[in-house]
Length: 229
Image (cartoon, rainbow, N blue to C red; front, side, top):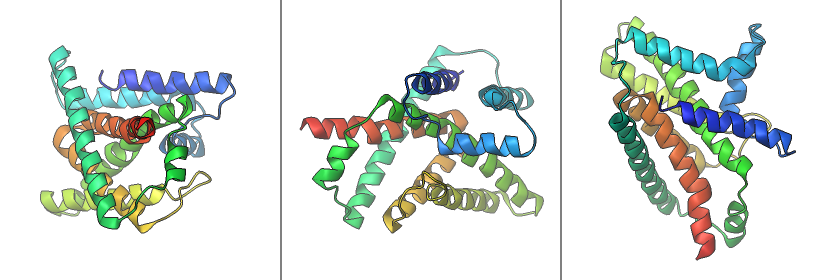
């Protein structure tokens, strides 16, 4: 229920942008999931959002979680997402200072020129990167480690570290890859650990919410405020 509005904004946003002639704003993780399904013969990739919701529903049923929808719980999840997103902003700014990676005026001007396509892409990143790297990869790595009789703390640690390194490295692969820097790789690996911790401690919904809010804050809200100043 918490994820549904974000999925709707993202999917309808991509459809609307494609009709207006803007470049499709599909996130890389979303693209990888769809390409992976195509590679195994599943052609109905438009059903990916439905499959995600169905998988979460099955997970909820198997886990025997409560079926009552609580407005207070959803509000609390949103508040947690905001809190954890702001905390990651603080962590990122601190790391930025330690690395002395100061933003130039030219870079700031470029960052402030945001479009609806960028916002939709950020929402997609929060959804599909968390589903892929935390919901799927973290879970598989944890279960794989447990199958090798590794204790729970070690299995959790291995799943978090390995998935975070892969999460960071994925940003430098493919046609839309970012330029590699030690600073960006280290921060993304740390962010991966952060989101993996949220996933295991607070659940996938909070991880998605925090990731989405963080991207929107850092990618759109903060540059806009800086530009006004």
